[in-house]
Length: 570
View: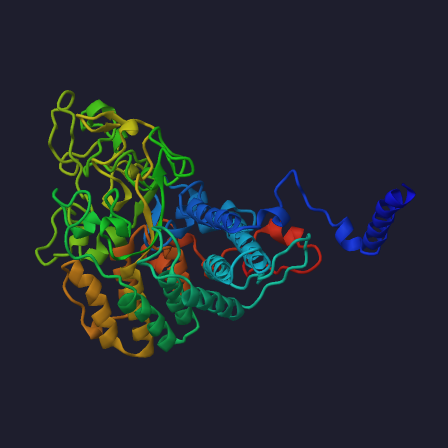
């Protein structure tokens, strides 16, 4: 009996002595009742969830959810100004861009959060219980998110802290890395992604792919002045990724009046499953699905329609009577949905790039203007009174019979020509429609109820044109630009006409409210010059140092163990 008892005792004593000699694993904390990196990155499902969070974070930044994106990416550039004359929304650079301001703070915090989470995925994938194929796939996808975030930060702020390792303990000694070092890290991460991610024609709609990586490489190589590599990366996308420009009508309204450019922005037409072969990266939204952001009762996110279309619901006729059916915006091309007119295109976009004179009737396009991107389907240029019960001006033009609360400098936000891509005429979900017969909308409307482009093939083509031009090959640059212009049925450009400004004009014609215009202008060194030239509201307030955002003061304060230098001028 003693022998039976003593054996377990001796075994237990041995275990105790053994574990007592290895204090580190014995004392290591492993949370069991809350999530932490230690228990959240175990299997492939955990990594899929972490990457899904990165997609959601990018979507939130791009979703016009409080000024982090549209109010800085487009407002205050050459393309748009704040029609409500709000100085804090880049109506005034001196007011909007300060170290204490919301716009720079939101960009800094959000993009660095994506970098931090990507670093964790990269670090944890190396030691998790995954196959080698899974480790490579998860790590490469996270690296592309990191590269994309740094691409935004370096062109907004210039030199920024370069963090490529997971930070598991408090740190307050960050310093700024030179811009070129950041760009080289973007190249390294995007090259990894271009090598290891699947092609765009096999990934699930909305997922990052080899084409996204090569597009980012092309743009970054231009910044590094390595034009041959930029051309090569862009060519991988344009010619070797099973992508092509859409040249025929397609999708949900292909049998309705319109054109192929109009089709690109109709509900359900953004992804490859719809037959759209020029989509490279599309932000995914779902209606009335948990996590899908959009709801039939209205949405706080993706409010492009609300922000960038005119507030026609508030227009009265010349007699002061209601001009719209039920006093609400109709879901037609005539009115732009349920807009409030925060963001209005500049005269540069509305008139000049199409060869129009803003002093003349902007409805009458010259016969030589054949570009479908400025057709009535794609830029409504006239407002028609639609209320037959209250106005004797029913069916007549606002431009011919101006409304008393519209035709003055401070209330033009009630009506202005706008790109129809910001709204979904006739395709709003039932939940936001007041009257299906009259096509009137509830006040809860305002979201753009469709998926949204992050990158389309024309942007890559215009990047390659830019690289060709900077290399000195204007003939090839013109040939690429004409790929885009031919689809638009626009007059071809000649090699002698191609300049960086012309490429910016073409980007404006094709990519309004799609490209991050501020990043493009900053990358080209054109921001201050073109804001002064084309933005009548913001131009007088911008100064040379506004080419970069200020480093948020809260970040400088928190970085107590090293100096996080402020950008000059702030």
